[in-house]
Length: 159
Image: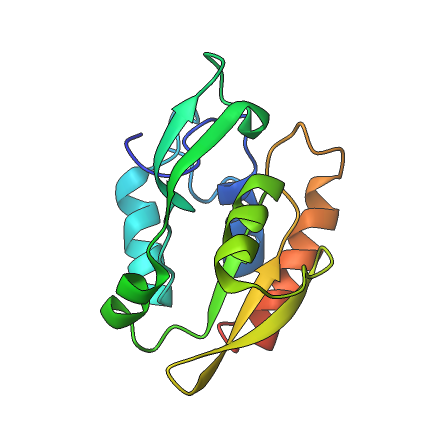
């Protein structure tokens, strides 16, 4: 899948399936071997969810997916992002590296996992949520992660 969270070992699309459709397999293809990119993109568009990396240029110091070995060369340009999506009300990070990258840009306090820190941009309040990682390397259960994400989507009025 040429989109975010394509690995079947990652629970992001299971979390979304549980929250919005009460079905952890909702976003799987019929053979259950992949996530359905077309269905996921339609869902994100329908719900007003945009997904991005926290950096536009990185160097992988090891040849693996671990954020621990990422060097951020160019962080995301939030000014540009906010002009492209002016109705954005929240940014959500799912890992420590992304959180640290945004905190460095925003100069705000780090939110606890499952919580947010508010900041101002162009005279409007935006929330930075720090959510649990959807990776199975993060030692929390799917129901736990789903509950935390569901509470956030409730607060934002998305569900």
